[in-house]
Image (cartoon, rainbow, N blue to C red):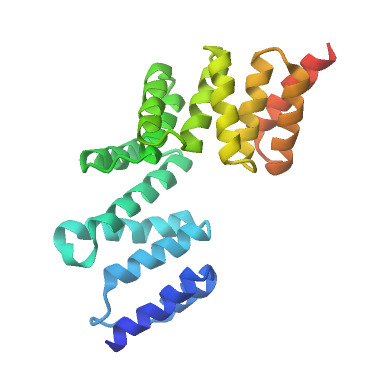
Length: 233
């Protein structure tokens, strides 16, 4: 019981949003066979994710996923699926698309089909240039959750970027922004949709807001530049 209470102290710090404190606490715990190493790895992985230290997070998240077959009592199915999804996100962000695709397909095979999984697969398809598959996957995401802002935004952006049904694209982008009004990605998508429709003044308004939210984003910068130049012609 004492060892369980040791873990709980760190969990309390994590749940309070003190990720640095939680990480420091978990790392300070003595190596002891009586501690649940998989639960500890789970929380270490989560702390590193929250702190943006993705390479460190991978080490611990992979331990949780790997332990499922060896010691199923140490990690619930829900935790394993959560860790698989976090692995997929990290792999995707770091350009390891095959690994991301593998983890996401594992989630689908297990019956875990939230809109987030389909949206992630759709993004990978978009990165690979498979537009039709991308649109199909975003459609599946919305069939799971018609109010998912990531799926709404992704579908709207792809339709706009491909100049396919711009009216529908505009509707999706507006709905996404309604759900996530502070999202740079949603502001960018709506602005880019207006650009594709030839409404350059409206495009600049939303793209400028997106740039303020995410000033280092090269895609937003290129979209704003295109809209500004078009509006000045």
